[in-house]
Image: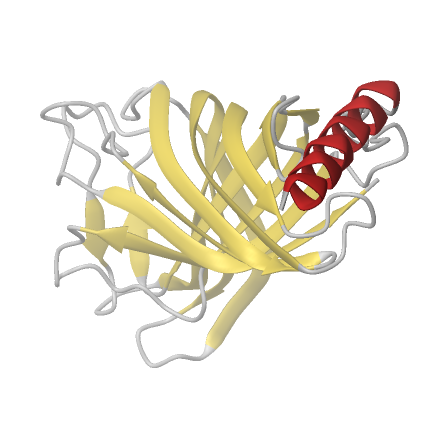
Amino acid sequence: MKKILLLSIGAFFSISLMAQETPVTPKKKEKIDLSNRANDHFLIQLGYLGWAGIPDTLNTSGISKTINVYFMFDFPFKTNPHLSMAFGPGIASDHMLFTKTNIGIKDPTPTLRFTNVGDTNNFKKSKLATVYLEAPVEFRYATNPLTGKGLKAAVGVKVGTLINAHTRNAKLQNKSGSDINDFVMKEASKNFFNKIRLSAMARVGAGHFSLFGSYSFTPLLNDGAGPVIRPFSIGLTLSGL
């Protein structure tokens, strides 16, 4: 019994000495090199434009569209390479289409009037376009930040300032629809429009393509200048670089 006890004590001390001689080295956390990651600096968006709060009396026509171009600077989180913040400048333009409508963008009136002129000579196609200089800010997530492939998602806001508002009218016709003259008339004025636009936005997709949506918190027109219209858009984003 004594021999067994002595052998057990000797084995215990031998294991203890071996453990002290070979300390365990903690594993270093592997760093991910993000120097060549896909940053999605360049964004091109093409989508459908709608107006929330539009009166039923307005004769909208066709598929109105929004076209946006942004150059974004992307900064990944040090604690999580799947997350990043991005911001940068861009140009956003909205093009709302009408038919048989006179848009009084230069009329000396307190409100912007959309007049139905279907019972007299009118333009077959009319467009109201607004162009903004915008600065979007996005919170981004990517499942594979190194290659830029896989699921991507982003949410954020964008603030813009109005740099142009104009109408474009084409193909003058009579009330029966017969052409009178095929010419284009353009008028420009920012008097009726809100100079600042604040919008929410979101994107989700994979690789270079994603679906986007945006909604303007601020109304299109100044207070008292017409109906409270808030533009929104949905469409496709092409991203790269």
